[in-house]
Image 1 (cartoon, rainbow, N blue to C red):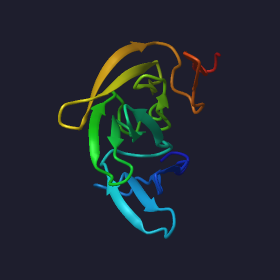
Image 2: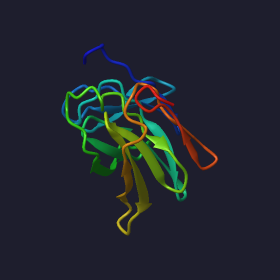
Image 3: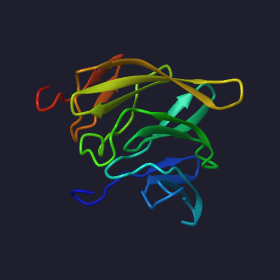
Image 4: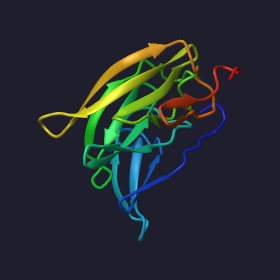
Amino acid sequence: PHYGFASSPLVAGGVLVVQIGAGTGQAIAGFDVATGARRWTAGDDTVQYQSPVLLRLGSREIVVAAGATRLTGLDPATGGVLFHHPHGGVPGDISVSSAVPVPAGDGRVFLKTHSDGSTMFRLADDAEGRVAVDVLWTAPVMRQTYVVPVYYDGHLYGMNGGRS
C-alpha cells in the first residue's frame, strides 16, 4: 500500500474481525476475543486501508467488508462467505483503497467506490441462506476520500472530493 496499512477492528459476537490482507483466503480474519486465537480467515481481495462493519439483516448480524474490487459479506461466528459482489473498483487504485462500507438502514450499504462517485447497495436474504446484493444507485457524489461518511436519520453526511 502507498501509505502502509490500516484497518479498524470490529467485535461481533465474541469475534474480533479485521481486514488483514494476508494473501489468498486471508483478506479478512476473525480472532477469539478471549484467547486471541485465530478462528477463521476468508476472502482474496486486496486490502489496504479498509475496515469491516456490522450490519443487521433481518434477524442476524453480518460482517460487511470492502476490498479493492468487491464487497464481501461474512458470518461473524464462522467466517462463512454469504456474498461477494463486485463494486467496480480497480486493484491498486488509491480511490478504493480506503473504501469503508456504511450501513444505511433497511439492508442498504453505501460505499464510496471511485474517485468520481459512489454506490448504494441493497442486501437481502435469499432462499439458500446466502445474501443477494443489488445496486440501488450510483452517483457522481461523495467521491472517494479518506473520510468515511455517516448515515443518520435517513441521510448521508460526508465529503465530496474536498467539498462538503
